[in-house]
Amino acid sequence: MTRMIAPIAAGAALVLLGGCELGAKQATQTGFRGTGLEQIVDVSQIKEQAAIPPAPYPLPPDGGPTAGQSYQNVKVLSGLSKERFDHLMAEMNQWIAPPEQGCSYCHNPENMASDEKYTKIVARRMVQMTQTINARWANHVKQTGVTCYTCHGGNAVPQNMWALAEGTPEPGKILRNKHGQNSPNGNVGYSSLPYDPFAQYLLGRSQIRVASSSAFPSAKHIVSIKEAEKSYGIMMHVSSALGVNCTYCHNSQSFRSWNLSSAQRGTAYYGIRMVRDINTNYIASLQSVFPAYRKGPHGDVYKVNCTTCHQGLPKPLGGVSMMAQAPILWGTAKPSATPEGGPGAATAVPAAFAQPAAMTGQR
Image (tube, rainbow, N blue to C red):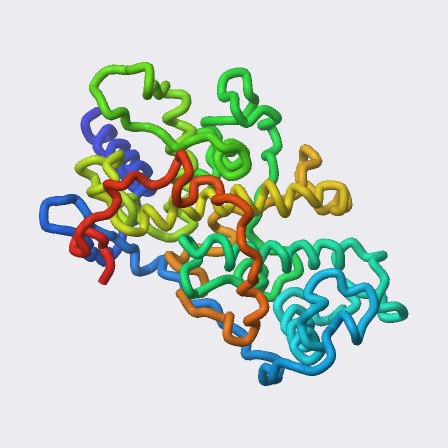
């Protein structure tokens, strides 16, 4: 009997260990010794930096007739010079359009001014969205900025996007929600967590809360196990999207404490609010424009999450900026009000986040 149990136990151990990532790891201390700030990377899983295409041709000097003067029905970027406008169109062709379609992916070649193709209407809105990201959300995109290529990577449709998942018609519920939990799903690291955390946190305005500031529940901060599981679900997504572990942003002494966290936590804080802005004000607003085959199982349009840009890297495209060849995408619009969650807003990063440089984790 003992001889039979031993192989079974060994086999079970191997199955359990299969959930662990075996192999060499690279550990980097990012904070003071003993603070629990250490970044662990599975070197076998490091993705190569995406191949960024060169510009179709050198950026022409600005000046001369504008796009609005030269072409009909230019509703966005009409004040940009014709030469710079043509250059951006060539870049978008390279960044997004299928090679076999080229300009005709968005335009009717018989009438370039026509708006008959939905892709042209979407492209206009996406240009406005990109400018807004670069102009209003510098707390997240910094001086690197984003272009169409950051998300699309040469594909007509970004490879990483989300819609309300099949089987989860009510993402705010776990109980009585068929297949809403305990079903292996890559969105939450194949854990038994609610696997559709996006609608609540990346479209809705739910706050990510787990740890309380006191040992007992209070009127100010009561977090149920149900809500905590949802928060863990979105955190699993962020970790996978960036290819990092929890201590990339948090200090394991206190996951809640801002003054012990790394600078990356502040960047992520604004990033989550930026994604909400994108999904609510730009992508969801195109619900009536997209055809049915470009929508999810519940009929909602596909939206963005952290993986859309990061694609497994702490910095999209390895931190390489493409803005020098598309300066118009920096945008010039000033926000009429403080962005939700931005400086001065009620949910702004606590003042305690101002911390010594040695604790920021920047090197």
